[in-house]
Image (cartoon, rainbow, N blue to C red; front, top):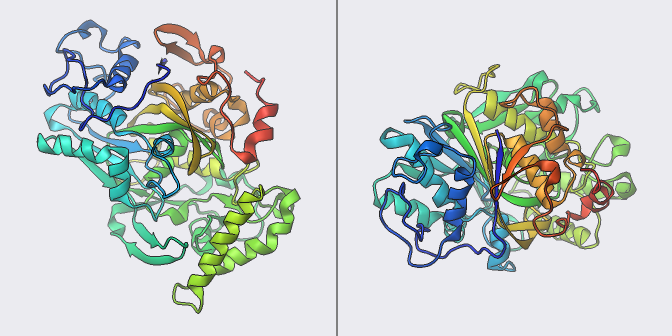
Length: 487
């Protein structure tokens, strides 16, 4: 499959009430037209048109570009990047660099509905951080307006929060409450020896000491004990016929970039199963920080102790506030911690484990040889994110959208558009080694055919969309600069 790229420097997200198109396209079925310009809708349309999808019907009311990917009557899930709501210090523009925008979602779903027909359905959402205010992130991204538009018309489109645990935190950082949702909505899938985490040398009889910042380490290690590697995936995903990754063109401090592949983490209901890094430095088998930061081991022990205590333990609120404050101080001092560097050999494996599950696990969670559902990828880079993504990116006006039916291929293209060498980012490089993608014989070094604004190119020929490479996260800076020439 050829990857489609559409660029339009200076493009801004529209502020129309429902993000309807500002032009009456022949295939547009709803009738309403926005009074203000909506260039994003036209760019999404161009992504499909320049690939020649349903070419014989283009320009007519019968044009249905996604019919070859989305069978009529399909149950479709759009896996969005809703990482976290807007924070007090964050500008509106910065927020749009970390979360997908409703205008891209609306245009995509319009064309999905053309393909599914009257018997299909569409859900959209993901599993954001546990303390995310779901209603706020929908409102601030404009996704609530998209949902309202379809609801008014009686169309089968709904937002879904995939989290099975939701927490509330105070502004100071302590946990105020934990809401547990129905376990029946999640299915625990054990990859066992098929997990990429098994390639990591064992530290003791239990295996590696996996960690997630601010989580009880005993819970994480229980999911990855011995030869078992369990992931709790939401049934909404497993019961879908088609999954569309709608991600941001954005950097990520733990895996380099956060596009379609990293977005599979949003399918998980229990965050406790997500191995983000391993305790300590490489000197003791960890990848939490470089060996040069081994002096942080006592602090890592302190964080483990606090995160493992009951919420009712004496002075627990004060302890939680203290370690979160201490963590912020460490980051401001420029010290790498919590696996936020290129030496993190855990997080990319976890993300590709989930990619395997979403491609090969059937509705009952049984892994099959054949792909169990179709996957598409659309990357929103109208406003992109650089530096310390995924939570603290710096906004960059990239004016770019990327589409394809191979998530690894679109992520590799995204690397090129960001000015990064895909071989320097294990998440992307190893996806071709470990996954049975639509083209099973493809190698990471093979050219990806692209259409860039109507012109045929291969990914090696792509230039950074900002006219310069994206600024990497702090823990990746030297690593990616050294590899920048590798194209």
